[in-house]
Length: 205
Image (tube, rainbow, N blue to C red; front, top):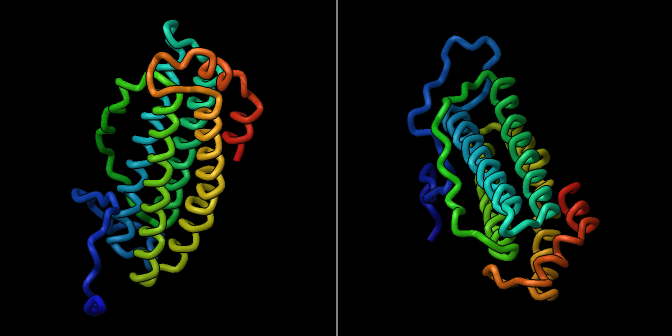
């Protein structure tokens, strides 16, 4: 049965429930409140992803794991995510919206100690981001904001698609060379650390 007109399906968008719009903005034009709140909430989500990836990088820098190239890969992805969050905040500001500063959640990856679970966590984060961007683009269309829909699709959703594919390939290769989900990875962990070219290719997309 079709969804009744005007009634939205349950959404997973991380809306900012305490968001306060700035009514005095001179540049705000056709920015629906729900889109502004969602842009604010999604920006925070991306910042949390950046924080989590940086925490993973620090795990692989520890002397009992010592995979410096893997650490560099996660650190670079953290920097990319932070830049993405800042780009979304810049867009929100350009549209006359306002960002509400919020506490960033703790990484929650303290138990990760091997390449495979780290890559799985990262892949899950990117797939979640993709789903959120799809919803945000659709939400913008539903509320007659085609500009936001286009920007989200081209600048934030589009670049994620090939990166998710490449990360999935890297995860497959990690399993193929013998990496495990614990500290017993042995030579497989070392070998994946030496695949600097492949790691670089993934991070540069």
